[in-house]
Image (cartoon, rainbow, N blue to C red; front, side):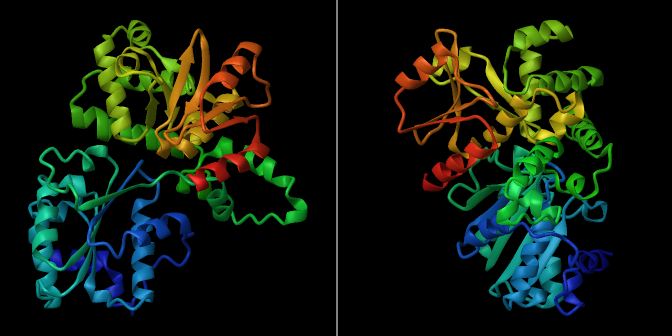
Length: 396
């Protein structure tokens, strides 16, 4: 039975290296990041929101490896949530694979494990493979539990790559849109369309009306309610709706708790669940640790399309700010708040960023912005200002 499943997952073993993804659109920026980690012996952990394209990316990367000359039989992909494989450990599965292809442990093989968190003790099993066999491992999951290695089995042995929804350039590529330089004015209209649609690949390609809400329901019921055995389903859904309506705002767990008639501690716990499944991101306030812990955090959605599917495409300034957050999130942004004046982002490279969609800084805000010590300062009022942000991020 296992043998048949392995062949189903790995059609390139019998199809002269064809992976079967001819009609899929590549994401060169992410694939190049996967490539960057390829020469290292380290395990590569791919994480991110459900349906953001991790499985497709692994198969596209397998396609790259085969084209590069790696023998198809030395590449093994499997999704570990398959019920047929439920009784087997990762080590059992890899032993069966090597036996099937008569590959000794000294021979280099390339493992691609999808849904890795479905196996208990997966951190320890990956460490054992890493230590005892000649392997390169890519493993993917839609939960941040892939990163919660309590016994530090993978410390110093893993690189982490979070796969985000499509950015604007990838969106254009997925929509097969090419804009000539003479028509560059059209980019802003396409960008507005992108802010409304978001970057979840399946939704961008097929635009099925219920796709995004079904995705969120899937995550809430499977990865949060069922996994954490939460009895009050409706309160979790209502909380998520409140969060989407408050994108870009600091959120008070006490006020939300009063609205939903649950404790602030329960709100905090549910927020952590939403973070763990990559539905939201929470940004702390700039300051000393006690200020960060006592101050409300700002909320951002994993994808602008998901936000809009719950609120409608309203308050474009907040949606635009959410987009900017996703561009700067790897720079550990915090928001600045002093004397009732707020600045959106202060990055760990000492860059200060304020997003003012189609607006000017207010007098007090401008005064505070000008006085704040930073290596670079940027006010982003719209699409035309993004080029400077991208340049700053590349330099950093």
